[in-house]
Length: 529
Image (cartoon, rainbow, N blue to C red; front, side, top):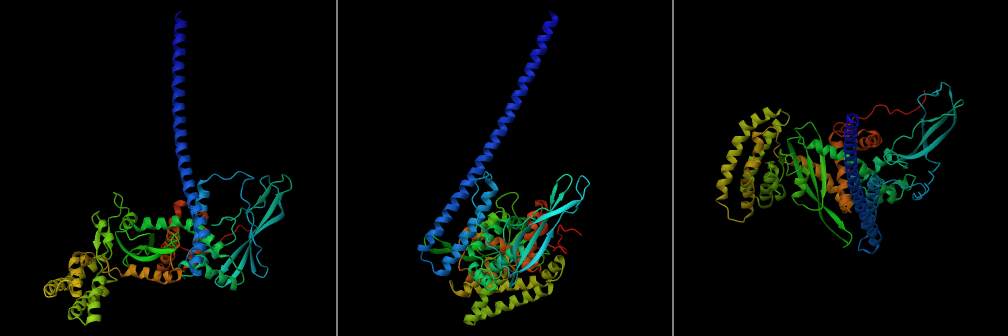
């Protein structure tokens, strides 16, 4: 009887343990199901969002023919929409489950490349022709893929030849893998893609002009195809720009400025004013980088979003900028304002140039003394620069402040002279902050010089075709102009980056940033000795 009772207790205990284990398993499975449901819901929402945006673009493309656009405007709108749609398709492919076999969309047949083009053969062979079973492999054939390459003014064809090797004993087939490309199974090499991007975003050539240039070189490529390449490259290069932004925000002093760019409103057949914001390190910083950020307005929230404000992890360094009100909220969130001496000087120069103002002339003499000191300390270390500024620039600035205060009492309210003096006196602390900080520049001219080439591009772009197109332009221009700042040829830089990007580990993406990039001396291929 005792044995039976003991046995019953053991059975009951085992049953409880089994029930508890089942409950834990059920709870774990329920949590996994809930997590999977959330992931599916998020992916479906992303798919719906992208699908809707693509539908809007398709309607815009067909509706554009009836809008009041001239020929150049309609051409630019078409290429923008094609590029946007390709970028969206790339994003959609990343979240959408692959189509079942047999349901995939039929791919258009690629045009055969002209036989007249020069060809360069690149052989890809296994590293070893000895089979795993110990037998020697025999070559039984090859696969050939042709890609269109471009050197400035000259098209050539890369013939990628992948030999097929088979073992006579165990029938094992060995073949070198297909090299990774930015555009999978696409026609262009990284060199051709780099040419299109550099021509559009550095040389300011819209795609319809590139189409005619390529036709003269021997091969016409439809601008819709060029637009698709641009759209896909823009998506692929975005992680690089984001990495550069993260690294930029690790530095304590940054320049900031903004310039207007017209952005198209297809529904109304008109444009409205958008802005290209730029952020860069100072000339005293060994890191040479500029990051452009395109936004559909001049609102200060765009600056705060870029700097990560508000927030404990936001940027809280010194921002060198002009007196635009959009920056003001940043200064209330811990960012230190550093003014631009050149902006203050400019107002007095206008007084002297337009009205031969004696006040303007005397103010320019003060500015001249300050800039002469700046030229002398430009190559010195930060502590030495600060010491000399405090010894020599501080007395000049104090004397100028006393003089401006006295002159302000003599000029009538609302006059141009009063406005020029008020601008300087109202921002005096920010304007002279550089004197007590050797890491601060005296003005914002460095970032203005980075934006200046954009004005040339505006005349050739006419406008940004969409917000997405403006953001894509900002991303590519960030890389191109940063490459130039570091003394690189933009075409060589982008070509190498686009070749390496498909196989570059995310953990080593920083190696491809312009200020760290080093071109590989030898490009290896899977070729037999």
